[in-house]
Image (cartoon, rainbow, N blue to C red; front, side, top):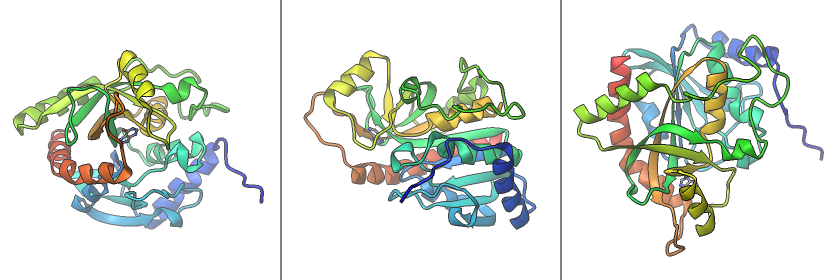
Length: 282
Ligand code: HPA
């Protein structure tokens, strides 16, 4: 069997999905929220206007990983019109980078101006502990440096420029707001650089020492492609990592997906307080 995977999408492909969503609801989101591994239960907090399983949307990539529910929720959270992705897809699942970035494109066509992106990540910074939240203040696009960029292919000029700037991938005002909300709620908010790798294998101790040497604080297998697509289209980004495990720089412990999901349960209440506070202030 020959599996044909889209290497890139046209504006018509993207708009076909946006239209399919518009046919289901008149609701127009302003803020997009992507919920990472183990963090999907946050979606239950929204007052839903429409819930659409990914499988009912044309071309929409469906998450195959445990801990990712796979549905789209349009509704309000703290009086803000939000579009929540309960579960995302990753490159390691076999999707192309264009597919990984597609949901953000659809968000943009539906009018989303701000993307709040969350993930579960391993702590490379030795001071970070499982259960901590980390404000992403920059990323290291290692996966993209190797050639895997969601913007590869013909540029869609209607969406953004061929060579988009990434000097402020994470919006400074939104970062300041997150710090303020964390402080007001006595939430310890770490801060640092997130690196995304292709996965699905976790890092070796040598990989991790390399990342630490390169200034990385947390490592994961997502987020960066979605942020690149968001910035290409002029969407402002707030990124939060939930630290699910300590990365294993000396080889003394092992990392498991169960550990990542378990940490999600500790992280969800804190993340919810933080996100609610940010949404209220937007
Ligand atoms: N490495 C990569 N991805 C991850 C990790 C990790 O330690 N934890 C959660 N996602």
